[in-house]
Amino acid sequence: MLAEKFAETFPPSAAARADRTHLLDEANRARARGRHRRAISLLRQVLELDPADHDVAIRLAELLASEGQRFEAWSLYRSAGKMMLRERRPLQSLAIFREATRCLPFEFEAWRVTAELLRKLGRDEDAQLTLREARRQYRSRFDRAQAIEVLRMIRQIDPWDHEIVLDLSRLYAQTDQGARALRILESQAARSEAARLRAIRLAQWQISHSFLHLRLWIQAVASNIQRGGRTGEELTDPVRVR
Image 1 (cartoon, rainbow, N blue to C red):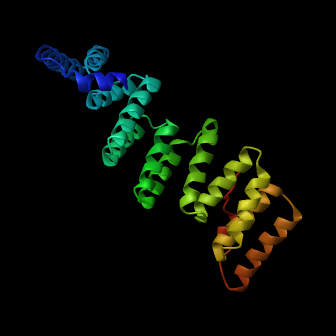
Image 2 (cartoon, rainbow, N blue to C red):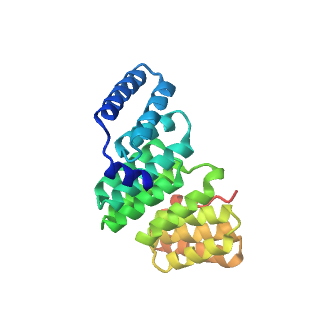
């Protein structure tokens, strides 16, 4: 903040602008030649001349991300995005955070902030698409906590999406939260019918292994058979508890 106020009060001199131009030219050449560390060093020097230069900060963040320096890269993206919000430029901020999700696909905060900003802009559908893309990044068993949070955020937009509820219940079951999984499945069952209801009942039984849920699943399958439906789909495995 002090650096920004200083920059506003004392604009860069002609010499400083010349230095900046020279450093940027050198950084561009270094990057074009694949000398990323050299380019990073030069861009750092540019930021020292003008800490409020968000364009340079973003270029530096992208290079840092490509070199595996994810923490510093995210710090730069976050600072630049917040700067745009302070300047009442939400679309520019959104563009920065979207870039962060592209360069740092496993940075949960980048996805969260992007989705929240989209919602504030009244773009719930885009927010949901963004969160679904985030879910595709978190597939490892080591990422289950992040995946759960992403799915819970989707449910704040669309609480009763069938596939999202099944996905979330599976993750709850895999993280020793079977009771929570069964609660959301039961709520979903009240809103489901036909194939979707049968999938919900099967998921409940696979989690609880209880006679009650086995009976409910059999009833759902029997109801389908009575209506002349197929039984092959009942063999699907919506929830696998590991």
